[in-house]
Every structure is written in structure tokens, then in C-alpha cells.
Image 1 (tube, one colour):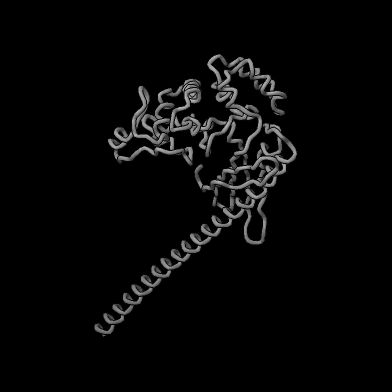
Image 2: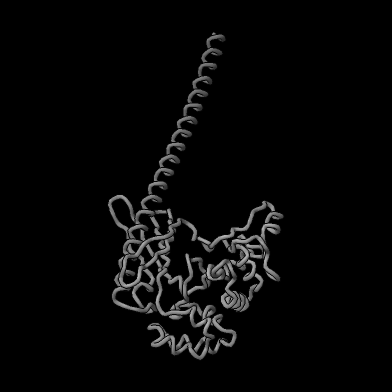
Length: 312
């Protein structure tokens, strides 16, 4: 009887252990399955968000094309300059919203203008960039360092410059780009450029292919002020008041007495390059989409020349 009771006790403990192990395995499998389902849903929502952002881009391309046909100038009072209101996404499978904003990239300083023909620094443009940096309370040396980063030679400019001899001493080491920038975030690699400085500079600069003019109808106040050393805050306030949301009635007449001939050649009242930022929210998944759009003159097509997810 004693042996039988011992056997029954061992069997009971064994059964309890098997039950506990089975339950633990079942819970683990259920948890792993739930994670797999969630990962799949996140990937699905992310892909759907990217496709919705592409749809928003197609819509904006139509708006920009029609604007190019209807108007010879570009200013902040036009339809494309209005923030895209929150549009709901509501279907049998997903719910969310998409918002967006279009910016005129020619309202910013194009760093690729620093290098002119024959790989020579464009001195008036370099001086404008130096003024812009001073206006933003940043180190004006960054203008020369930027020019060194994108020129084709490997000789450091004097007194402000930095070439491979500087960057190969960093940890990790790297080399200068030595060509026109394709993305403005590459400025973050410059010697002396920290994150705080880059964040301050970013809204006022861009990296566009070829040489571009600054659209004074959409330029930021800091960029407007950088056009000439004699433009102060009060002068810029008058200019902003004059352009308001409809742009300058005659920008050439307005700036003819304010700028040097070299800088007059750097401004315009129309644009070809725009940037779309679309934000798609589906469930807990957020997709941030950027695209650079090029509008052909005279009502031509609008093409996408650069796309990125999550960063500019």
C-alpha cells in the first residue's frame, strides 16, 4: 500500500509537471504567434502608408502642373503652398489619416551654387552664404568648408577650408565628397558642423542640381536678408510686408536699388523645384515621406527626382 501511494504521488507530480510545461509552451507559442501577426500588420501598414504617400505625391504633381499653366510666378498665396489638411483613410481594412506640406526649395539657399564654372568658387555666392550663417549666429567658416566639400579638387581653400587631411583623421575616417550634393543632409558630415548648428541651418538651405535662382516671393526672412550686407531686419520686414501672400508686383524694380548686379542675377519670382512632405498615420504606424519635384517650364510635366522615407 505504501509503495502504491508513492507511485501515485510520483505520477501526480509528473502529470502536474507535464501540464505546467505544456501550458508554458502553449503560452510561448501564443505569444510568438501574436508577435508574428503584429510584425506582419506593421509591415503591411507601412507598405500601405507608402502607397498612400505616393498617391498624395501624384495629386500634388497635378496641382503644381496646373499652377505652372495658370501662373507665371510662384508665391505663398497659391494653392500648392497651403498645408494639406488631414484627410481620413477609411476602408474595410485600415483607418488612418494623411497630412502633408509642400515647400518651394528655391526659397532657400542652394549650396551647390557655391561652385561655378571650371570648379571655381563663386565669390558673391560664398559671401552670401557667410552672411546667412552670421544671421543665424553660426560659424561663417562653414561657408568655405562647404565649398571645399563639394569642389572637385583636393586642395583646402585658405583661410577657410577642409579636405581629406582633416576628415581622414576623424573616427571613423572618411573623405570629402568632391562633387555637387544630392541631399542636404550631407552637410552634417562637415568639419565643425554639429547637430544643433545643422538643425538651425536646415530650413534655409537646400541641395539642388545645377545652378538655381532664389525665389524672393518664397524665400525665408534670413535668406532675404543674406542677399546684401546692407539689408537689416527693418528692411526685410518692409519686403515681407510688400510681398505679403501675393508676391512682389515687380520684384526686379523692388530689388534693383537694394542689391548688386551680381546678386540681382541670383533672384527670381518663379520656381521649378518643390519638396513634398507627406505623413501617413495608420493605426500606430507612422510613415513620413519626402519627395523632390521638378516642374518643367511653360506648363510642362512635373517629375520626381528624389524620394526618401523617414528622412529628408
